[in-house]
Length: 328
Image 1 (cartoon, helix red, strand yellow):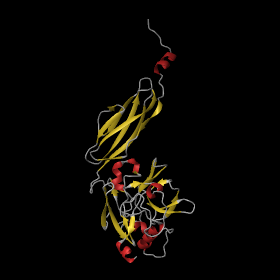
Image 2: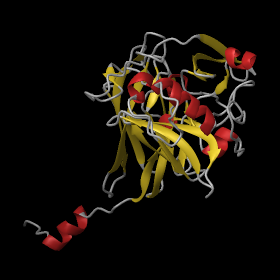
Image 3: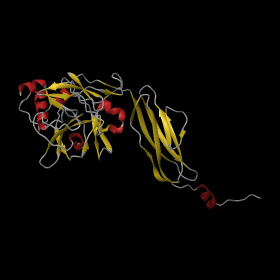
Image 4: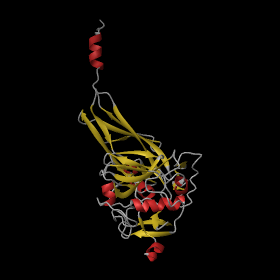
């Protein structure tokens, strides 16, 4: 005699439940070549102890199991696809994914195309070296500040801070100190002897680059982006998209690159390969603060303003040049 199973009984046997919760994965977008990276996941509340399976393509052919895994990245630059699945009998599978790229931080590695400055200074606070150029009355950093005592690297990937510098809120950059006057900015996060540029510092910069003494801080400085932006490459791809009106000659060797900005207290990141933002230490009458920016679609170097903690932007430190000091 053959037993018959009703359709209701079949549905009951095959019924599965949705997991309660979302897989949490906090991993950097970029890591250093050869880095040993430990990652931890979780987030699923029901069932209490699902199996987490890690798939890392093309690094590993088999999955890794557990809440925590340690990944050994190769000594060469490459991109990896990371996928995590949460599995448990009687529940639908849950998953998340991310990309991680290993970056060669050597001088001829994954980032190249910037030009050397007039000199180099050493920041003994955290062991960083910075090149600088003299433009007008001031010495300017020709790379973004990467002081590790504040701010965050782009996408919170520590390996990128030595390449692109860090992003700082205005309060972090200036220490909350507003200032005006040539060479009179607050030290803020800059090394001793250097300061966050004021509107007057920026104005001196724009007049020199554009060779126009009538320009003010509030002008757009049309044509200056070409003279101050680098034809730089990251992971063998151009950082600035093609623009027939901007060849990125970088004749000033200021080396502007589009490393984007952060929002919501460095919770999210935008504008990579499109924007570069740099702080001024001067403040508007309405309490907002100034910054200058470059964008891939424009040839100028306009100013804008935002709330003190509205965004995270890059920092270029300045000081009065030796020639300017002697003239005072």
